[in-house]
Image (cartoon, rainbow, N blue to C red):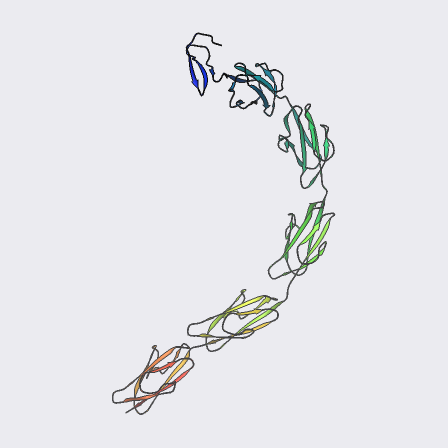
Length: 446
């Protein structure tokens, strides 16, 4: 249809005769290619609700794309999808009406309106009753009572309520809203609804913890409540399982349970009634460890666990079956010669206190080097390391294992004629290793 005179140009395209109607001189632009024109389909939305409109064949997706171009004579089917809380009320324009799908034949440009309304809503209110405690939740979400005990839901929807009692309570059942029993409750939102969830308190029973024996210790429970030492009674929900754990104080032992439990492990009690449990702590036997020191040397012995520090304390008592480790520390100039008694060797001494024990630590002291002068002559003898200077000092202790070199110097008019003793001979320097006390003679002649 040409509304105004306009220029026309005939063009051969791909073997077809095409007429281009120019919009500069006409009301419309329509391209005829092989005889097929195109028309625009435009979608509008009205109403307070929300939703989308789509087309088949594709092109319309309104929301995003609310208009598209289709070939002349094409049949376009429009479909609506209302958003949550809305519903589709019907079509107008484009020869469409009603609330079903809309079929548009593209004999010309078309405009169609899709109307969406807001779905009416009713309020669902939840209340709780009874001496117990718990929560109520809904699907779809909205109710979370505790915090949120009322919410609006779309007319005609079904709302499922679920009750969850706290650990010390039980769910006793529903009332109102057409609900009953203790399962889930589905409420049809045909009107405002009110539902009550009843929670009852579970009975509680007392756990009494007693302690006996000459020893001391503590008992604790899971779940918490018993901490004895401190609190030796507590109440627990009926049929709950209470686990008791005993810990003996240092120097004592846990001997076992009596009453609702036995053995020496943890004690698990089902609170089907009031319960009483006794924890027995004993004083284990103790044995004496005695440490002796011998030898010419000096040193100290200490123990782990502490108790022996000899020097000062050379005996103490340890709990039966305690493993005691003794360590020796030598003083300067001495060596540790080894253990005897309950231990041997020169390393650490490990003693298990299954009975009274006795251990001796032997320390070897410095070795005495003595020099004697003989003959008709005179002279002096000195040492390296320094210490011996005979004339004046002819006997000196040296740490065990020390190599000592002796030198002899005759006085004027005399000669040194040689060594004897201590492994020395000849007239040169004398080397003595102080593995034991040594005695050396230096002879001087006129």
